[in-house]
Length: 197
Image 1 (cartoon, rainbow, N blue to C red):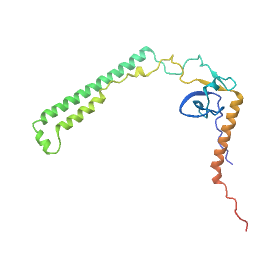
Image 2: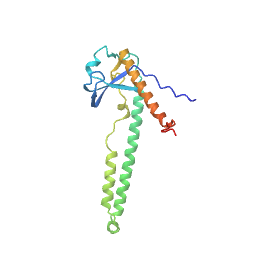
Image 3: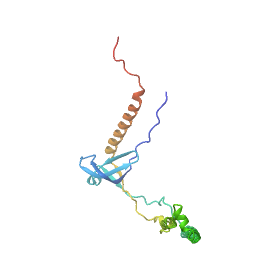
Image 4: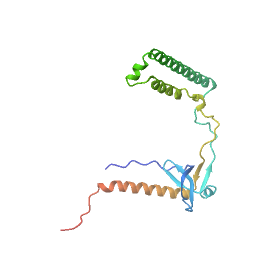
């Protein structure tokens, strides 16, 4: 008999997040746009319940060092120089391609009536060429600007539910899990006989 893999236990650490669609509060059933979320569970709650210690307690952020990527000034300078070199090479290639197109245009200008007779136009290819170079020449942010400062505040507040509320959430999650397992197994079971003959 094969055993079902055990699901990860429910963690009592929830993050406060705003949502777009209001849903009924878990406690008072009033419409709310605040959700307490963790990877295994979520529940809609009013902001007034979050200040009640009988429901949930806010967890202060740890003073431990952050897990974010921190770079020294030398590394940032190196990355910035590499990026600038790439951008400089890219511009040189674009200028070389532009010069090449202008040479083709000058050499093709004497035969422009031939191109027109064949169904093409030099002005149409030139216009499409100029439009393709304009988006690539738009300004971009260097990679060093993408790193956030290590002193940035956390994005979501953390909450720990009261043990009785958390026990209710555990029971509800377990009930949902058992129901989904039963629905998955039900089609595999034999059918009950309808009549005895």
